[in-house]
Image (cartoon, rainbow, N blue to C red; front, top):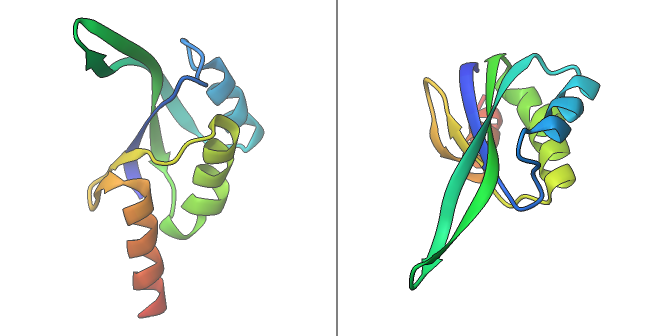
Length: 107
């Protein structure tokens, strides 16, 4: 997995992604983190803005992604999903993990 972007957002994420940076540092994950903001839902004219982070990984192999990156982030921020954008996959992390497990089982 080269030059992969992971996008997360949650009410549990601080506005500058400092907690995420510390978590990635603790797990020795080489990455670049960019804070983001998302409008997640609107009712009438009242919209909710949620903090998020773009995580850019320069090198990571698929088999280590779940235990080394996704599980720590998912558990720390209480996430259900994240969006992955890489050269060979674009979509929800859960679909990515299923496809990775399936391809590992066929080898």
